[in-house]
Image (cartoon, rainbow, N blue to C red; front, side, top):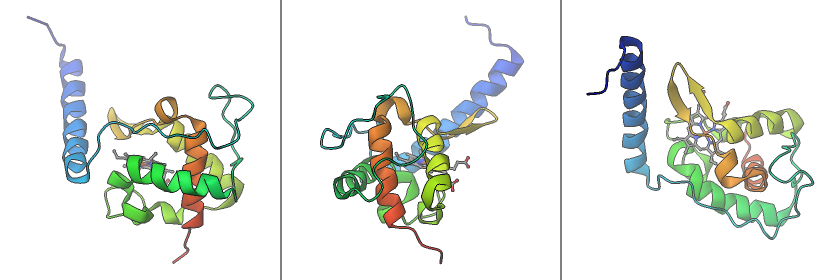
Amino acid sequence: MIKISKGRAALLAAAALATGAIASSLSAHGNVTPQAVDTSALPDLAGGNDTWVTVNPYRGNQKALEIGQSAYGQNCARCHGLDAISGGIAPDLRYLETGDSGDEWFIQRFQHGSARDGKVYMPPMGEVLGQKAGWAIRTWIESKHTDE
Ligand code: HEC
């Protein structure tokens, strides 16, 4: 039998809870595994996936807008809502700040996700999808921005 310390057991319970919450929201919202995004039509970034930039290199790029829209639908909509309109599970990304400071916050979250107190609120996307896909999604999300 595997011995589990009290602290470890509490952690596992918390993780199970978090996974359960995400799993139930996912089963209602479709795909679980991140879907690879074809970004070959976009200009390569100098640092590849090793050096992440903090300002959107594709802002205003029409191709990035199209790729971003579809990549969002496949990887983000299940939590952040169809067409970027949140149903309440996760923040409504239409309200994200525009411009450079919004870019920096966006790509931080995209790359690393969000976790607190042993619970994963949003899984990290950087390794799986890569920064080209991240910036394409940002380009599309920024086009959906609203202040209302
Ligand atoms: C499993 C559900 C889930 C998926 C899938 C997901 N997110 Fe999130 N996301 C969240 C949650 C929950 C938060 C709030 C995190 C917190 O409270 O710390 C969040 C926060 C964010 C934030 C910060 C929002 C703010 O107002 O501060 C950004 C940006 C973001 N997500 C982008 C994305 C993008 C882009 C994708 C797709 C590539 C994505 N997320 C996929 C659940 C998800």
